[in-house]
Length: 311
Image (tube, rainbow, N blue to C red; front, top):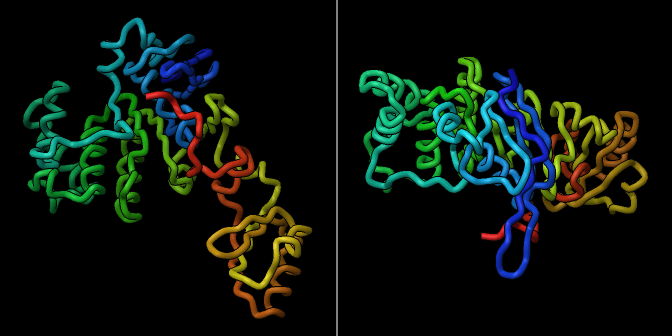
């Protein structure tokens, strides 16, 4: 059985004398047990999709089913089978990470003993043990976010909605969260993950979709998306070249105070020879998912949509 099936899903926000179509006839299917990525810029429609699929927002038209159950017709039944980390969630400042996890699990019906055991496990796995009894108001933003994610991942719910779960975390903390997400999938959960960290999407997801302007532009594996770039290698030059000189070798763009060119393997030897002759520093690596996203959408993932949904 498919875990999630969205059919012709649309959402239009209206207010202030204008309307914004946040989702436009989106069709999307996620298989049970899959770790599925949802990529897009701010305002592209990702969070709107998650809110509708989780039963937190009504669609303008279309339908979503979770495990064969219509989300709009039977929201309570659906909510018993899901857990969600919202993008703008906040912890209860007077509660500790341990209290957040244990009390959330008990609200969901777990026994006190089970809640304590699961809290021990997830707090250790996510590096929260040293802060387990510290009120959230005294924690950094990254630790507060980790607490929210720990609450959700401790549930082992059938479907986990993770909307920017590692926002504000340092690289080490992000990787701890990644491993707990992987464990949830191994234990049978289905995960829908949104993220602006494209290395995160590349590391975690089995399959992903790219949404832009409320429409799905691409669905497939990260590797298949990178293959759309039709370039195999990226070279970054800190200085010494002009965009005009590099243009014959491939796609050129400014990055980190220098120029990056995406090119083919056949051109790498010539470009590195030119850099050595001019004593110019060059970094060589494979084309990344970030470049594939830029090629597909035409804009960086960090660029916000001026037509963002109305508040």
